[in-house]
Image (cartoon, rainbow, N blue to C red; front, side, top):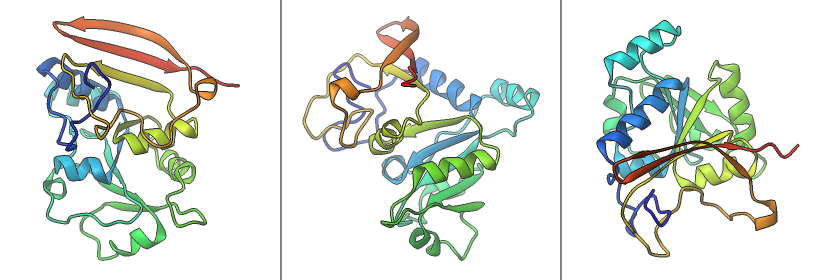
Length: 216
C-alpha cells in the first residue's frame, strides 16, 4: 500500500508501484499457501493472477508435498467473468467460489477445474460456508490477495489470522482510492487488534507482519 494507506489510485489502476523486493516478498507468501483467494474486481484490474515462478520456491513446495502452484480461487457472486482474460490461459489450477446463480454461468466447463457453490439466503456468497468447503478440499492455508471488499468481509467474520503489509514510498490520496480493508469498516472499540510479529526495511519500503489477536 502507499504511505497513506491506499492499494490503488483514484481510477483503481493496477497497483504496480511496489519494488522488485516487494514482488519477491509476495511470491514467497503465495508459495507458502495451499490456495490463493481473490475477488473479481482484482482479477479484472490485472487480467491475470499471481503465480509462483521461482524454481527454488517450486522445489520448496515439492519438498513439502505440494504441487508447483497453489490453487487460484476466484470469488465472484455473479459469476460474470470475462472469458477472454489471460487468467484462463495461465498454467495454474483454477477454482471458482460463487453462488448458485453464478455457478450456472460456468456449467459448460473447461474454464475452472472446480466450481464451489456457497450461497446465503439473500443470494450472496456465504463466505463461512465457502471457507469450510475450501478447508475440506485440502486448502488449509489460504492467502487472500484482495480486493479490499473481500478482505473487509473476511475480517468482519474473523477469518483473517495474519496480515502482511508493504508500505511503499508514495502518496496516492483521494476519497475514491481503495484501502487494504474495504466494506463498512469497524468502530474503534470493536476493531480487530493486531500484534506486530516482524518489521523489516528494504531501502524505502517497510514490510510489516501482524497477527490478528484473538477476541475469545
